[in-house]
Image 1: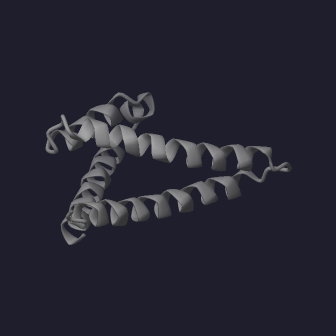
Image 2: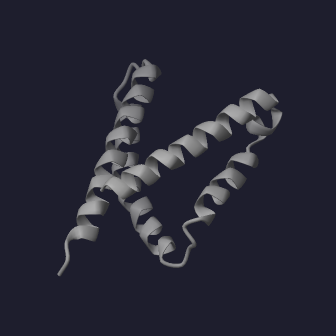
Length: 112
């Protein structure tokens, strides 16, 4: 059995979970919550939803054209009311960031 696909997936998941953890920690820090209830709920939801999301991703990936993923993300972003109300410069910056992020993930995919 070839372990290269598993190693590639493992590296991608470690990077993804690392940055999601940093983002969650930043958001929890911004809460300035007096109790531990909200941070515990947020951490628990991340711990539960990350494997569920990865399972859905693996299931969807089998029947999806990889080139359509960027288009799907662009369509989903475009349906946001806040996005539609923002200025053209802000929209262009968001799309640029999305494509740069997609490019970085592609490079990571090739590298791993």
